[in-house]
Length: 177
Length: 346
Image 1 (tube, one colour):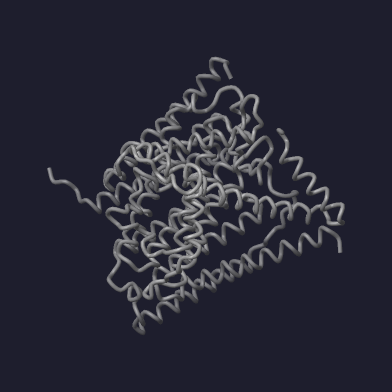
Image 2 (cartoon, rainbow over the protein chains, first blue to last red):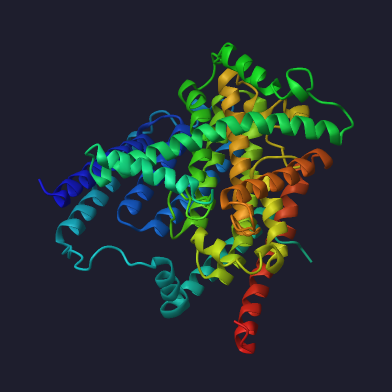
C-alpha cells in the first residue's frame, strides 16, 4: 500500500470517529431529558463540528467555531438555563407533550428531513481541484469580509446592534418622559 | 546551550529512524514525548509555584508562611500533594455523577492544551499554528464549561452559585481579553506566535501597546479566576464555590489546572508583550522562564494586595470601562499604523 493511500485511510478513520462523536452528541441534545445535559451535549456537538473544520485544514473557522459556539453561545444558553431554573431541574423539560404537539413535531421534522435529503441529493458536489487549503486563509478571509463583502458585513453588524438595543428596551422598558 | 532541546529532539528522531521507523511514526512518537514532557514539567512546576505563592503571600501579609518541612519549607507542597493523593475520594450521593467526575479531568486537559502553541524558545514550539494567538484565546474559553460542569454537577447551592459567577465573569471578560490582543495582531499582521516574537526584536510590544497590556492583564486575572476577581470560589462567601464538594485528588486537579492556566497565560503575556524568548547572553528557553516567572510574581502581588471586589462592580468595570478602552485602543492603533505609513516610518 502506498503512503498516500494509507494517509487517506487514516483521514477516513479520523473522520468516522469525529462523525460518530458529533452525531451521538447531537442525538443526546434531542433525546436526553435533563436540559443541562442537552446543553453540554450541544457543546460536544459544536466541538465535533470544529474538529471537522480542522480536518478540512480550515483552522481559523474551526477556532471561530470553538470560541463563538462552544465558548460563548453555549455559555449563554447555560446562563439562560440557570437564570430561569426551577427547583427540580429534571422537570425542566416537559414530560410527554400532548398528541397535537407530537403530530406537529413529526410533521415539521419530516418536512425538514425531506427538504435536506432532496437538497443534498440534487446538488452537484464539485471536487476541489487545487492542492490543499490556501496558505494564508485569515488574510484572504479578511480581504473578502472587509473588501468585497463589506456592505453585507456592516449590515449584519447593524442588524446585531439593533437586536441588542431592542433586547435592552424589552428588558428595561422605555422611560416615560 | 541555546539549541540543547532542539538537538535532543533531533537526536531522538534520528535514533527512532535508525531503529527502522518511518518519518511519520517518528514524528508522532516525538509529539507524544513532547506532550509527556509538558505534562511532567507543568505538574512538577506547580509544586514549586504553590510553595512560592504561599511564601510570597505570607511576606506580603507580614507572616512567615510554610517554613518547617525542609529548608525554607520547600517540601511543604510535596507533603501536601502526598496527603491529597491518599485522601478519600468522596462523590456526593445527589451529585450528577458523570458530570461531577469528568469536570476536573476536562479542566486540566483544556489547561494543558494551551501549551501547544507557546514558543518556549527559539524554534521550540510543539506546533507553530498560523492562528496560534487565536487558538490560545478560543481554547482558553472552554475552561468555563468545565467550571460550570463542576458547579452544576455537585448539586450544591454554593457550587451552583460559583458556576453562575464563573459563567457570567467569562462572558464579560472574554471580549476585552480578545480585543486587547487585536492591536498587536494589527501591528504584526499575523496571528502566528513565532512571528509576533520576531516582530519584537527591536521594541517590545509592552512599549507600543501599554494600554493593551494593562487591559489584557486585568481581563486575564478575571479569566483565571484569581484575586481580586476570584468570585467563583470566594472562600468566605461561597465556601469554595464550584470546588466545594470536591475532595482529594479531584480537588487537587482543579488546583493544578488553575496554576497550569496561570503559567500558560503568563507565558503568553511574556511572548506577546515582553519579547518572548528574546534576550541577551542567556539561552532563549531560560529567558522565557525568567519572564514567565516575573509576570507570575505580578499576578501573586495583585492577588495578595487587592481585596476581592463585588460581582456587580466586576461586571460594570468590564462592560463600561475595559471594553470601550480596548475598542479605543484598536482605533488608536489603526490610526497610528496609517500615520506611520503616511510619514514613511514603516
